[in-house]
Structure formats: structure tokens, C-alpha cells
Amino acid sequence: MTLTLSARRLDLAALETPLLVVPCGPGASLPPALGAVDSALGGALTRIIDRRDFRGARDEVLHLAGAARGPARVLLVGLGAGADRHTALRRAAALAARRAHGLGVGSLTWYAGAVTAADVEQIGVGLALGCWEYTDLKTPPPADERRAPLTAATIHVDDAAPGAAGVAAATAIAAGYELARRLAMMPGNLCTPDYLVETARDLGRRHSIEVAVLGRREMEALRMGAFLSVAQGTPQDPKLIVLEYRGTVPTAKPIALVGKGLCFDSGGISIKPAAGMEFMKFDMCGAAGVLGAVEAIARLRLPINVIGAIGATTNMPSGTAVNPGDVVRAASGKWIEVINTDAEGRLVLADVLDYARRFEPTAIVDAATLTGACVVALGHVATGVFGNDEALVSELLAAGERSGERGWRLPVWDDYQEAIKSDVADIKNTGGRPAGAITAARFLKEFVGDTPWVHLDIAGTAYSETDLVATPKGPTGVPVGMFVEFARGRVR
Image (tube, rainbow, N blue to C red):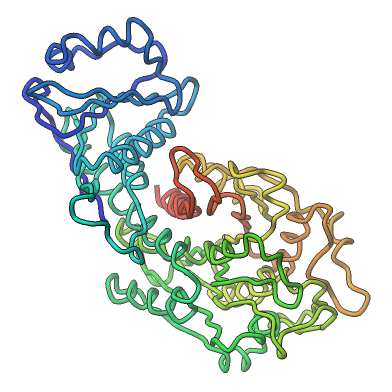
């Protein structure tokens, strides 16, 4: 359900709201503006802070019932010490919205003192992320057991103009996250390559974006043997989806955002273990991130040209599936020995990256849930960042910091090329367990030529198999934020 955001100056002394959220850092004192609220609560807020019952630590939450008048409830949320202000505000807002959604308050008011447009944007995005829930396939509970979902949030601002700007940006970015998370959460029998095509075409209709789709026949004509080798074991028609957003003059060269769209990955003949295989519906989070980013970029009306390219299929074992040891020809002309059919994402991306180059982009950034090795290296905190251009890598790392989607650079040195040399072909699709995330990125580097390129391995950050306090189990929306901030950074 969509969250409606607003920002305006509030009369806190006369405030009536189902829930007042107040973020506080360590050592903070009660803001004087909340004196009337504190008085209505019999001085409870002052006592709680003075006695250090609430200390403002990250993810700390204290919930108070309100008085007869004023806020019905007050929620203190900790910002933590030493964190970037925007990151702290966004995380606190997400946690507050999760609590509010669970309480069934319907709407909330946020007070954090003086805030800028950028602050409002981060708060708004955090609130939208926190109250998101996928209920499309759930039977509603009985009427007497239902709680009102969080559908509205008001942020207190001293100045309406920056508040409105922050809300507008937050609403656009939140829509991108919502789209990406919904697609990722859908089961593989519903979110198919055809459904991703429908989603792209819906984006095209709503935002006047040109959408082109290549199926199996068209890819055969282009000799995309790497991509098609992954799709040869499934009856579903694979799709290469290209979106062209034109936000500036047509002659300006675009940036290209590329996403891996494995709508379900069984591993193919190199089949995965049964335990946890249901999470492989999330193997299309790179594609979902591209679609979500294009949604947000179009809503923000950024003056930049953007190509979104998605390789969508499923990886299934069958009598026609590609076998370990097979050799296939990529569209670029390189011959690839398939050592492991579960290293399929890089085979799909090899042809999609090569196809994206025909648009002569100034930069290509791809995102993929590519390797378990990246999860081992970085856990669920940072996205693996690889690239062939120092300036572009720095751009993406900075975009990650601004968006709250942090990345960490790993090398793609020539030394790693030895691991993916093949005895029978130009290259093989896996270099084994050592440096697995790096050799996968090194494989992709073979298909971008001299175009500035960055690869984002989001295997550990695109979704979580457990609850992460501020983020529930399931898709996070990564890399929507990093993609959007990268595009915004190019036009600032």
C-alpha cells in the first residue's frame, strides 16, 4: 500500500495525531518545542531522558501511551552515535514506520527539529521502506483482527518550500523501491520474463519511455549463445528488455543500467541444494533494481538519457539444458566453456553487456545477485563494487554512501585472468571457489570493451533471509538507491 507523505509546519502544542515519532541521538535533551507534549504526559519524556531510560542508541525504541489530548502515542527512536545524519534519519524512519505499521495507527507525525530538503527526502524514503509489505497473495484476516496499515505520514518542517521538494523526491524514489521490492517478492511462477516485459511496457506507457523486447528468435539472429545457453533448458521464452529514457537532448550519450533477471535459478544441471532454493526467486533483483531506478528517474524527471537493459530467463535442468563442459559462442564472438551451469548470471550478462554497448553509453553499470562468494566476503552489509575505470568506481561508491546502499571495492586485476582460462575455449565461466566474486567480475570485464564499466554484486544486499531490524525478511530494494544517486550525481 502506498504511503502518502506530506511536510508542513505544525502547531505542536495543539497536535492531534495517532503517533508522534521523535528521533533522538545519544545525549540529546528534549526539544523545547515538545514542552506541551511533555506536559500532557506529566513530564514523562523529560524523566525518561534524564534517567537515561532512553539513550538514543541505534535501533533503540521506546513507546509511550499518550494522554487524553494530544498525540495518542509517542515513539522515541534512537539515531545512534557517529553515523552519517542522513543514514541515521533514514534508518530511524524505517524502524519507526515498521513499528507504526504493526501498531495499526494508520498515520503518524515525525518531529526532528529543523530539517533540510535532503533530510526530508531521507526521512520520507525511510518511512516508505519501513511500512512496505507484500500482501498481494495473502487472505486478509477477519475484520475484527485487522489493524490499519500505515498510509500517511506528516513531517514537521519550518519552511514549506524545502519540505515540498524533499517530499517530491522521496515519493519518486519510494515508488522505485516499491516496484523493485514487489517484483522481487513475487514468486517465480508469477514474476516471469513475460511479466517483466509487461512491467517495462507499463513504465513506457506511463513515462513515455521507449521499450524494445528481444525474444529467443531475435537473440538467435544476433548469435547470443551465452544468454541462450542458460535459456535452452526452459520452455519460457527468454527476454532481453531495453528501456530508453530520454531526459535531455537526443544526441547526448546515455548511461546504461544493466540487470540480471533470473526469475528463478535452480542451478540447471549443476543443481542447487534443495534447502533454501525457494530464495532463488530473488535472482532477478538486479533486473528489479533497473526497473525501479527507471521508475524513480522518470518521476524525478532527471535531465539525463538512460538505457535500462535486462536479461530475463529461468535456469532449469531438463533434457535440453546446457551441460557442464559445453562450449557456447557469445554475441561478442568469444567462445565460453561452461564449467558450472549455476554460474549462469554471467553468461546472461555477457550478451546483455555487449548489447548495451551499441548505444555508445558514457558508462555501463550492471547489478546482479551474482556470487555467494561476495556474501562470504562482505556479508549483508556492503555491495561488492568492481570496475575498469577509477573515476566511475568512485562515483558509484559515493552514490552508495548518499543512498544508504554502501559498497566496497574489490579488484579485477589481470592476475585473476589465469583462473578463468579455458583449455578448449577463449574463457570459462567460473574460476572455482578462490576469489569467486572477483573472477566472476573479471569474466564480465571481457564483454564491455573499453567502455567505462562498474559491476555491482548485490548477492548479499538485495534480499535477506532473516529480519534485519529496520528491514524485514525479503527484498531490500537494492540497488535502486545507488542507481538513482548515480544518475542524479551526473546532472548535479
